[in-house]
Image (cartoon, rainbow, N blue to C red; front, side, top):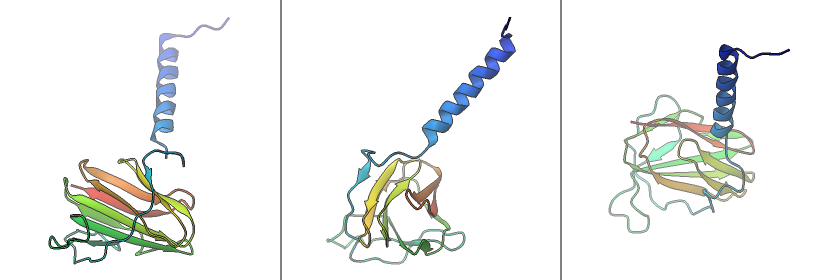
Length: 158
């Protein structure tokens, strides 16, 4: 006869909870409603106040006088060619509350995903895809592609 002790029941419950948390923390599927259609890259970009710690994606502040683009505090641009990320993977630091636009152009069709914010964009081959959001959560968030599973950079929100 098999009898579960209270300790065994607690261990089983903890294991089930951990498995559930791991499943919930995974990436979304292609039918994720937060995945947006690609949008055009901004037309003008100025130097950034982002604080990189190593090679990082291009980050720039959009001038407030620019009437053609929406007001964005940080513009981050990445290009993927032959499974190589340019600029190489690194960290980009932005301030909490800043408006951020991430634009990615890939040589193959893929999907962009911003962990922690659960945002994404389709990346048709050769066409820029963008996500724009307010950085209202502090922490370290990976920005990656789904199909090719490339980490593009880590977004640090302080």
